[in-house]
Length: 387
Image 1 (cartoon, helix red, strand yellow):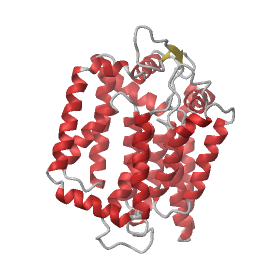
Image 2 (spheres, helix red, strand yellow):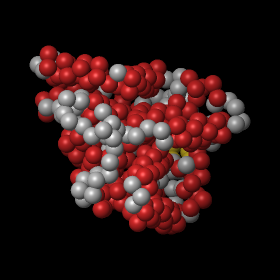
Image 3 (cartoon, one colour):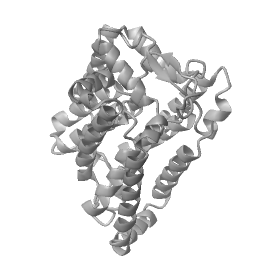
Image 4 (cartoon, one colour):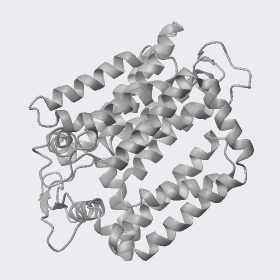
């Protein structure tokens, strides 16, 4: 079903990104003006929204919980694996395609997220399971989100009085979704890329982003783009030894992925957590749809080929862009447009990297290099395109 909220957020982000590409100075001027003249007003509005959401969250916690099947799915998965089962084979995961009520039809299937997600939440269940379900899951997510937003704060020039309520809104909105762990790993990957020494930043960033892929399959988009971007920059500078090291880091990530899947059966994991999301037939009993493009093509037997083709085309076009953030934004937008699942977690990838790109455009007044360079001192300058 076409999701108005999902599409509203997506097209707003696309509009901001396109305006920045075409008229970056205008966007920087607007954000600068908003920062200057809305210094007091904007935080008040954001705090009001956050407090209203927090109050509603507490009052109608059970209703929020009933609208999501992810807490029950993760809870069933971690309990099954803790009892020696294989949730990628055992059909113990409850699914429903509408808000849960006594009349809701519930189907049971296998675990639809990758093994690192399962293992981390199993550990958190051991530590917080005494809170009961879904509270242990919600608290776990709020903890992971807190760390992610704390790390991300170093990337954005926003005062805490505005950043804290904004982060709080996002944390509560996604508290019933296991996107927190994936986001934390993506943020950690970019943090490593910007903060570590250049001779190890790329390798560490690739490995961490590879771990993100092993939580939710959509993280494969920033992973592939990151590897191609880093390798391309090193080839451009004719640093072949570093290129080989980066390729080996990508191969190591793939090897780690195979190793963590082996205990559950590689084919079992792929069928349950990857191929499951590429077919409306396999998704019977849970939500499908999302964007207009997904709705139009979803009935076609060639939908998977259409989706993969669109993403590959976006990936090829992205090679013309110099900024890592622009590349990830473009491919993740294409991924979101053809996704058959109206999961709001899909919006995190383009949102995360568009925010980072906007942050760069806001700094147009600072001296900028004429083009991307990978310095032997710092890899940070290579993240931005020419200003």
